Structure formats: C-alpha cells, structure tokens
Image (cartoon, rainbow, N blue to C red):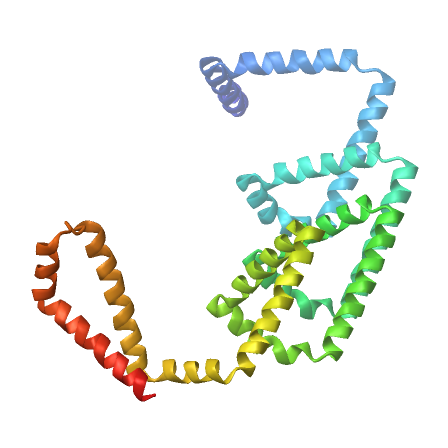
Length: 323
C-alpha cells in the first residue's frame, strides 16, 4: 500500500509527458524540434565571439530603433503607409527618391552653382513680373493665343529680326533717306490742301474716269515719244494756220450768218433732207445708168419727180432773185 502511494504521484507527469511525446511523434513536430535543436547547436558552434558581439550590438540597435519609433508615434502613420503600399504610391516615392539621389550624385559643384544662379534669376524675374503688373495683361495675352494673333506677332517679330539681320549700312542709309523724302512729300501734300481733292479723286476712281485719264496721259506720253522735230514743226505750222483760219472765220459776217442759219431747226432739217436726197440720187444713177436718146429724155420729162425738181429749182431761183 505504501509503495502504491509513493509511485502514483510520479506516474501522472510521466504519463502526460509520454502522451505529449506520442502526440509530437504522430504529427511530426518531434522531428522538427530535433532539426531545430541541431540547427541551434550548429549555429552556436559556428558563432564566434566577434559574431556574438555584433549580433548583440545589432539586437541592441534594433531595440533602440524600435523604442524610438514607438516614442515618435510612427504607429499613427501606418494606415497612410499601408494605403501608399496598396495603391503603389510608395513604389513611386521610392523611385522618386532614387531619382533625386541619382541627380544629387550626378550634380557637380559647378552645376549646383549654375542651378542656384538660375533659380535666383528666375525668382528675381518672377518678382519683377509681379511688381510690373503683368498679371493684368494675362487676359489680353490669352485672347491673343486663342485667336492666333500671338503666332502672327511672333512671325512678324521673326520677320523684322530677319530684315534687321539682312540690312546693311548702305541699305539703312538709303531707307532712311527714302523715309525722310516720303515724310517731306507727305508734309508738302498736307500743306498743299490735296486732301480737299480726295472726294473728286474718289469719284473719278468710282466712275472709271481716272483710268481714262491715265490712258490719255500714256497716249500723250507715247505721242511725245513718237514725235520727231520735223513732225513737231509741221504740227506747229498746221496749228498756226488753223488758228489764222479760225480767226478769219470768226471775223467774217457771212460765215456767222451761215452758222446762225444752220442753227435754225428748219434749215437744219432742209440741209439734212437735201444731203440725203443727193446720196440717194447718186446711188440711183450709179445702179441704173441712163440709156440716152430722145425717148429717154421724154420719159424723164414726163416723170412727176422731174417736174417737182424743176419746180423746186424755179422756187429757189425766185427766192434768190428776191434776195
């Protein structure tokens, strides 16, 4: 009875250990524990005092870093960091940091100096633009960009620049002289009152008379170029004789009376009728020539027209006798 009481308390832990070992054997964890023990033993055998020291320092640094991170409240940034990781922005930040680092590594002292100068110049330019009130011109500049006038202004500036590059000193001198002459001509035209003739000139342009005047001037110019000295002399002689003849006619009372008679409507109609009759008689005589002989003369006398003509001649004779 005494032996049974002494051994029964020891049999409980032993049985539990045996049961635990059996369970580890069944699920294969005992082999894993054996491998882990061997690995730890091998690591302990391989570790030197220097490696242990370094591992201890690394662990201490890690614990210190962990303590600092815990105190800095970085845990509150974990949701934001998680969101950056999920949407890929963290990778972009890493790439940007690498790019900035590469740029910093590539920058030399001279490049940094030039960049600093450029940045300073840009800030100074921005300050000057802000002070000059250029912001008020932005709507006008925007309108120029929208309607394409800015491109035209740029092209005009390029054209003017090209013209300036192409101009020589002689060309500039000639252009200056031409401009001075043009201004002098414009001043003379302004003083001469030619502006008052602009309505008449506009009317000549509208109705085409200006073109006719130009053509007449060209004709006169061509005639002047074609005239020789002999032709000018003959024309002058003809003009002189014509003036003498006109002077004589104007001094003649008979010629003036003749002009007055011709101006009368009845005289004018009579002359027009007489000339028309003479033309018709000429055509009739040419188409049907006379055959001659006494018979033809008798037929001509018996024609009523002949009697009318004789009567007209008789009346004319009486009128002439009366005058």
